[in-house]
Image (cartoon, rainbow, N blue to C red; front, side, top):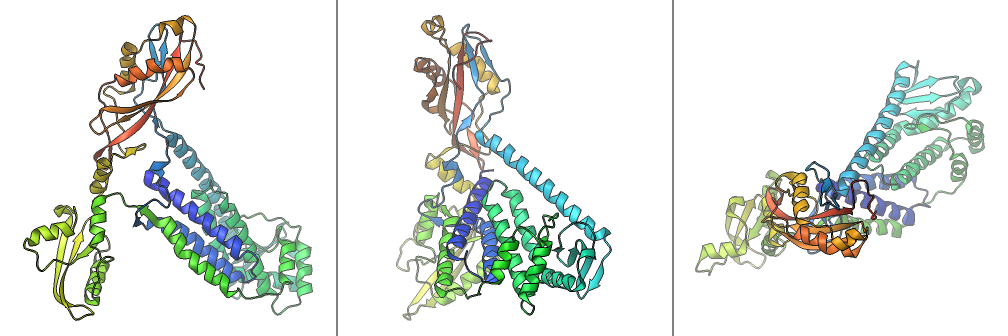
Length: 510
């Protein structure tokens, strides 16, 4: 789940950056095809770039594990008689559990709405009686609906109130939508809105795409026609409603803007703007696709990679062939020391801590001449980058996880935690007599050996209850550690403890 959440973060960050670049550089330009191409590139890049990752020495985009809250256990209530009330399930809850439910519900609702609109549109295309006009299918209706197109289908509403000339003008306009495949843009941005429904920038993308489609269709449709006559037609049908959200409409709320844009003198995009966009693309690519280098072993390997060596072209060509033949494998190039006494030790040193079990093959290339005419030898090593290796590095570095694949557990489940606290946590006598109630949130870490550490009260309604709660949690026995990729890791938890005088009491902490 962490991987998908990281993907959502990076993809939506890219969409926002591209939109900001569009607004700053391209918003007032009149080259509609260029602007449309940029937005399509923005969507494709935003969806695709997060799938590519490069090593860096620091986080440019913070990993989600740096931001997620710790796992919150169900609260346990300590009554004045030392009874313990709590949920009897061993299921742990996290903030991300609830976020996942909300996110999934949003996807289901948006997908249902999309399928409803699409099926409604396809049904109309199937049932309506159409006649062919060149490569288009024209459907005329007397219904009080706006003219619109969907791929090769063109719908003309209130056709009985339009002259043949006006119908032809509408068809020429919608022909542009059909030939330029504007319907693909609409479907693409709607699909994007299903999975990124929480991002308001998607609405901006939709609005801009619709505007660009209409501006481009108007510009082409009026190229060899009287502009005033065409504008009069726009005004005539401006009040007709737009009923199909997945189609391109001849008439919509953009009527005034469309008329203004047709009368605007078109100009080419300035060279400096093109240069600015092209220069920003690598920056966005780096920001979105870079990822922290978690293993020190990988750093050792990188020092001997193709980036650190002056590799002759013959070796580079061989390396590229191997990469194309085995795109799922990793490769490094090392140059053995010809004067080394212990060849094996030299090889091990230059490959860092690469596990021999990861190595798939070694291609030895001897007597390769470099640009200075010197004869040198190289070894291209093909290896598998195992996930266990990455997970082990996290354990070595003592990283504390908040969400893991296999969460840490207490023997007997959550009910056993309640039973343990019932015998080890005493309601302070003085506070009980004073009628003091409250809630204390105790944070702690389950280490890789199951022991507990890093005890801390992160919130409390009454500081006088802290010592009792903290002491009881400190006395808990070892847990079963959490695991990431099959390797034990440190995991952080928060346990809410409620002090209540009786089962009917309400705690004073929210």
